[in-house]
Image (cartoon, rainbow, N blue to C red; front, side, top):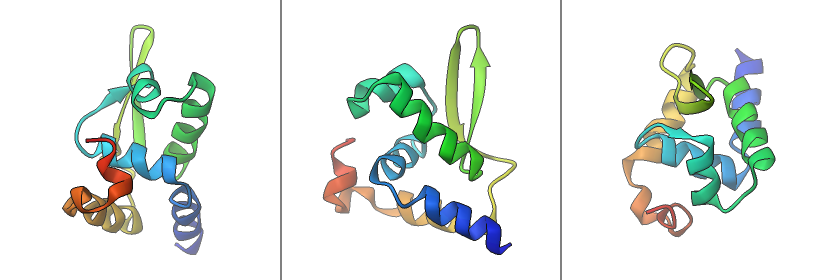
Length: 101
């Protein structure tokens, strides 16, 4: 339990990963869409997605050559759910999250 909390906390300690969670709380996105929105290269976005996946926040779905990501339904632990609820409650109030529209 403490391990899950620490892993989740580390995953959330980066602004880009918080932005990704905010975006995925609205809809699923492929890596190329995240690259465009975030203005980052594929390897950087994939690194952040891997960290979020390992922490149980997100899950991929392979469709042909594309990987689409969404918030995890089965693996989300209590700590992750609490954070996602807070994040999706009023993102427009935070200037950092507002940049993702």
